[in-house]
Amino acid sequence: MTERRKSIHGSWSGRLAFVLAATGSAVGLGNIWKFPYIAGENGGGAFVLVYLVCIATIGIPIMMAEVMLGRRGRQSPINTMRTLAEEAGASHIWRYLGWMGVLAGFLILSYYSVIAGWALAYVFRAASGMFHGATAEGVLSIFGQFTGDPEKLLAWHTLFMVMTMIVVARGVRSGLERAVRFLVPGLFVLLLMLDGYALASGAFDQGLRFLFTPDFSKITANGVLIAMGHAFFTLSLGMGAIMVYGSYLPERTSIARTSITIAVLDTLVAMLAGMAIFPLVFLNGLEPGAGPGLIFQTLPLAFGHMPGGALFGALFFVLLVFAAWTSAISLIEPAVAWLVENKGMTRVHASVFAGIVTWATGLLTVFSFNLWSGFRPLSFISIFRNYTVFDLLDYLTANIMLPLGGFFIAVFAAWVMKRDDSVQELDMGDGAAYRLWYGLVRYVTPAAVLLVFLNVTGLVDFSDLLGMAK
Ligand code: TRP
Image 1 (cartoon, helix red, strand yellow):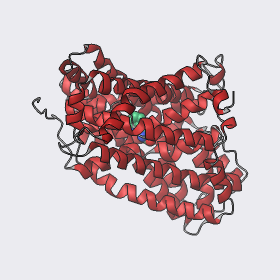
Image 2 (cartoon, protein in one colour):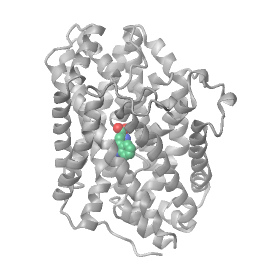
Image 3 (cartoon, helix red, strand yellow):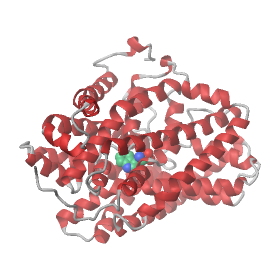
Image 4 (spheres, helix red, strand yellow):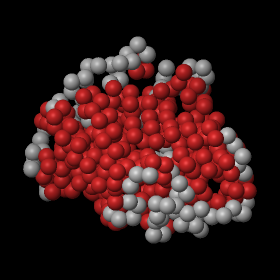
């Protein structure tokens, strides 16, 4: 048995702290902002079904693999991959998997922060009573004026990046653990309230039907890739965020049970958000495929018409900001941990440095919604015809880099690492549960990612099999 390694960055106070931090990472804009708008753009039910299947068969097993690798390596993903590869007698090339993760995290955070800035701005818009009695056109025009102004987006993006860097600079325990304790329950309560409102609105059935009646003729090969990419995105997988959180995990915590808990909570939040938003979309004759502005164009309608709407609206956006905050931290943590380990920086220096680079990259997204809103850099490729710079960044990271990262994590955990080592690390014996995990990570995950990739490129075509749209 190998000597147990320790992390130089400290550790969580216990299992609950890890569950909270990992749930905080998983639950974020992905669940409340992104899930509804991509489900809307990709036809609803069939997309949701593919997403749920991916969570169960790819997401949970990969989450277990990431936590396991992190806890065994006890360092930033780059150094963890290097150490574990050495231990398994494999090539040092594996450390580039850590590098790809760092790059993905930084690219994602660059746009994530801009959208989190929208949520920040909406706290004040809701609190001021701006949405009171609003009509669909009114809410659309508030959103259009806001995103059309690069200075405003830049200011809120800057504020959010500063908030993120402050928490990251303070390290693993302080702040982070405490924030999540009231955040997740609070978010549940407010989402349930919005669901209650949607239920009473008269269009609840229509919303549910849109979300949960799978119609494969409404989804394309690209839509399937987007659903799979989102399973990675929403669970924070494929770039080392969960790996680095796992590296702060105490020994003897059940990785399987913990991963399932996190995935279930995360999925619940996304479903509650979808069920609150789509009834409002149909009730107000809005477009389900409206894109990244969807929640900002629908929820204010609910807040504008319910009693106490200014208060609840402000509270909702505050919670959304917190959810984004606890996710943003995990996007940059792998890079910061590496800077501390390899460049001898203090956490404060590392955070400031990483933050400035990310902030500057965020300008690409800021301008995508105004100055460059007509710019479609890859319009010569049919699936990217209408993609702005922001859309491309999101596509590249969520649908290409994360699944690719997940693919290699699976290959490493189930083909490179010794089976005995994963039996020992997962600590659930060598029975049916372990074998199910091993089979999924060894065969199902890599094969699924490959097939979905090939299907998009047209090299493999299972659209006829499922009756999918072309
Ligand atoms: N999961 C978060 C969300 O849904 C976003 C996020 C945080 C993330 N860390 C990540 C996405 C790491 C991919 C990889 O909002």
